[in-house]
Image 1 (cartoon, rainbow, N blue to C red):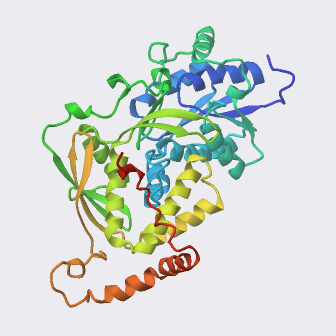
Image 2 (cartoon, rainbow, N blue to C red):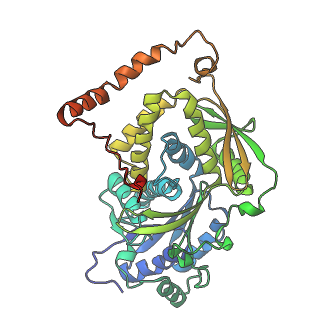
Amino acid sequence: MSTPTRPPVKKVALAYSGGLDTSVIVPWLRNNYGCEVICFCANLGQEEELSGLEAKALASGASKLIIEDLRLEFLTDYVFPTIQAGAIYERKYLLGTSMARPLIAKRLVEIAEMEGCDAVAHGATGKGNDQVRFELTIMALNPRLRIIAPWREWEIRSRQDALDYAAEHNVPVTATLKSIYSRDRNLFHLSHEGGPLEDPWNEPEESVYQLTTAPEKAPDQPEYLEIDFKEGIPIRVNGVAHGPLGIMEELNRIGARHGIGRVDLVENRLVGMKSRGVYETPGGTLLHEAHAALEQICLDKETLHYKQLIGLKYAELVYNGQWFTPLREALDAFARTTEKNITGTVRLKLYKGNATLVGRKSPYSLYREDYVTFGEDDVYNQKDAEGFIKLFGLPLKVQALLEIEGGGIPRYRSPDYSAFKRD
């Protein structure tokens, strides 16, 4: 029955994954809002997770399930720009889930409009980041749609409660108390949270990992990998041309075989708490390493250093769900400008969980061997360095002279010799 305090809703478009949370949301929406439920699932590379999804959605009470293949758009419009920006959250997280949410929410809004829905719903919890990512996107694209977030309304407070609700309403689910990890998979990565991982002292069991080979079980011989880029976009792997999907699939396959891309991170959520996530990003790790290597030789010093600052802010915007904002668009424009000369080839050596940079070349390289050689050359007079150093260090010299005049000793000349005193 509908709850009297809840405003009436006729039709809801639900972001549906087929997992435990969204599976029980379907009957919950029908029972508590008396509304029709249209389920939408974005195919971002979940693979086997999409199998049997329509039957499950209909059995749960949905009117229909819409599945759309958004993998190409995900890579070209979200993943590649984020890599080009050099965005990495808190030193390690490559933003696999964060990048996917604005795309899912954007398409959810479009489907809600096409289906005549007056509301949208999602299965993100009230403790996580995804609720922000979904809702900021919806607010940016259609603020007239009502947003329903069941985790902030219902009495379900745990996965056991959700499992009980599913059983009560004959909803088929795969989550169990024995294997209770919360996972999010797409073409770029696979994340793991919950269960034993909630204690940051617990080493992840090998069974947690679904994509990557354990480094100790990876091949005993290293493998060399070459990635070609054109204006910051990967176009070939080991000399073979691929489209975006082929590139990602091939790099995932190669990286996973060598145990590349495992990350164990306690991160700061936007909502104010710390959480532990274990991530597998084999192909994404290779792309980040290779792209950064090409920028080493193709970007001038000032641009490279400033781009590092931009990368931090870009990562923060993506993590916080602020994809559809003027600032993100402006940072994208900056990044695209810096990518014009990021064309060339990078060689990586893969061995038991490590991707080691061993070579890079580009027709736009700013590196010149004749400029940096220790041998004789005609382009650099080492005597010129003396004048440069005097000017570069002039502020330090002036400060020290003033301190000597005032107190007799510069501030940095206050050594403690007590450790050298004899008894």
